[in-house]
Length: 234
Image (cartoon, rainbow, N blue to C red; front, side, top):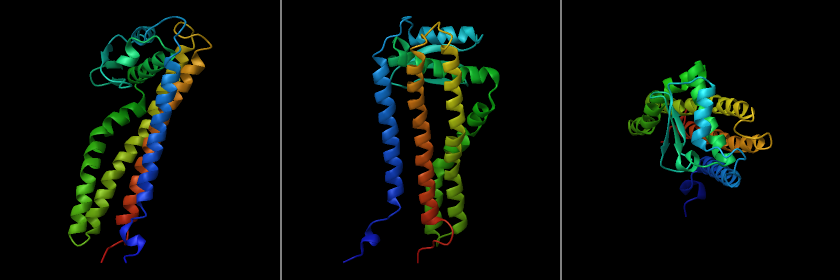
């Protein structure tokens, strides 16, 4: 009978851990959003109206606001200056929806003020996508070519660009939330009692980016354990 370690790769534990972390973060943000999506704002402002108010207040006149399909698919595109709100956000007057809309406006404010981490993230997106897409094929070719360590290391380095993107994303997302909460605290959109609720929604959303970074790090660690250094399989 083959030994257990021969049929089970112990590094799969890292993959499973990353998956569990991501699932937990996703479940938490969904449950938090649903909880505060049931609480309607006293000022009865929709996510769309909130976004338009914030952009006007920040004197940002070149950004459009549109509604898109999906649930929590909200995003800001600095390329075409478009702030897109999902159906669950655009027409809702809930505290959760307004918090999410304000967060996306935070990205628009970052773009408007030339926030450096946002520029860096935008610059490395194509490189990170290219690297993560080619990393595994490069590693595979390296293994097939008599365990060519140079190619394998190039593949690992290419995958590490995905982690770099995740790490740069963290300050961008947390900063956008801080900007959003600062704007919301003026009382014209959310009341003083409602702002802490929006903070909880945005904190839960931020955790998904932390979870993504941890999951990517664990995947990179697994690649290093399996293929890095002197791990040649005879």
